[in-house]
Length: 133
Image 1 (cartoon, rainbow, N blue to C red):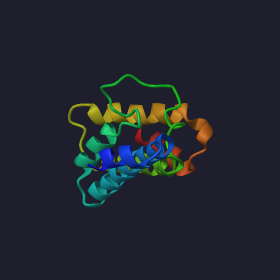
Image 2 (spheres, rainbow, N blue to C red):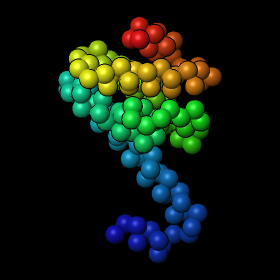
Image 3 (tube, rainbow, N blue to C red):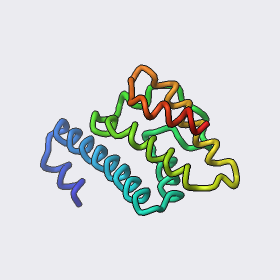
């Protein structure tokens, strides 16, 4: 397997770098799949995937996290976060909230934004959240 080849042929520093790059690649692939689902009109599936992203605390079943979860993400993944949130909010506009789970997800997004105000994300993201509440 790739991992065993990596273990035998690389220094520990190189191995760690490759593993970090693989993590970033998996995160970017997850983001891309959300964009594809939303663009194809599969809004509910896109929202499920957004809630499952391990690097964003948006799962309504999990308590809010106030720690800066973004500080350990690569700059590439960090740069995608505002757009992921916009996509999620747009998807919510197209799905009925039959059980309150969308309201819970909106609250998670609003809390997440409030905890990350210092990031100075695009103004339209804040406006979109304000309109959705």
